[in-house]
Amino acid sequence: MRAFMIFVDFADQPAGNDTTAGLYDFFFPNASTWYETSSFGKLSIDATADTSQFHRMPHSTSDYAWNRGITYEQHEAYIQDALASYVDATGEDPAPVDVLYVVATRNAPNITYSPTFMGNVTTRDGAFVAKKAVTVGYDAYTKWGFKLINHETGHVMCLADLYPASGAVGLYVGGFTIMGNINAAYPEYFAWDKWRLGWLEDAQIECLVYEKESTTLHTIYPIETSGEEIKSVVLKRNETQALVLEVRSNGGLDDKGAEPGVVVYTVDTAVETLQGPIRVLHNGTLAWEAN
Image (cartoon, rainbow, N blue to C red; front, side, top):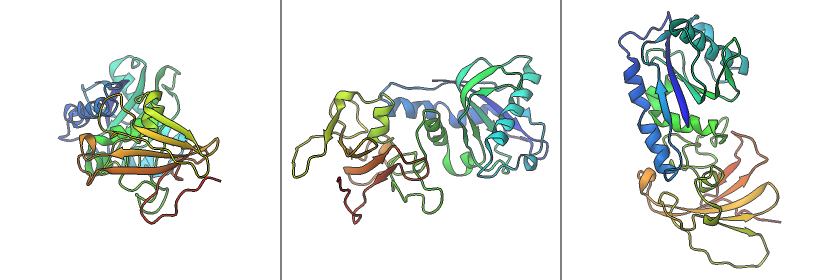
């Protein structure tokens, strides 16, 4: 994946003693190494950056009203302001990439969080820059660290947010997957998502159609380990719903996890992001039943 990173600051919250090189090193190469490990070598981020300076945004942080729920238009305007400042300083448009990272100085707490822009990224003159953009804010430095890139770039690859719009972060998926909690004990993407991304081959997924009163036996191997073994069992319920089983160990990227075991979860492709399109069946929850 090709990425380009630019750095911005603001008249009311300037970079001060912050450095562009320090911010680049805050995220890379760790974010790319994370992907190389999780994808079994099938994905890395080739991230270049303009570390020549912080590009001054034309408005103050308060003018951008950077709160959760910013509109598509507000988000696009912020990105285009950053690009305009970059073009003014360099005299050229950035080369086209897959994802643009617009990184605010760590001294700008008013840029509170780090959403992904899901539209094509262009300059105001219409020059194509990137397929998607991530606007990195203060929460990267105070809460999430480099793995914010791995969560937000998940959206670039069309993965959903698996935490709820409101309420407890772990409501739907508990301590599993970076798409549910960036600091999850088991941050690896679910087998379902690795399959969709092409990191797991079809031959590594055993697919079944539900039949009442039937029994099958399966051997599946931990999702964190490389190899050609079976990694998941998928039981189809209907055209949008499935039950999925995978094994989590406490190794690899899941080294903060506790005991290894089988994780069982439901997938519903008709459910939107933030509404629980994937839900882990915890101990004590009602069993998923296919009709």
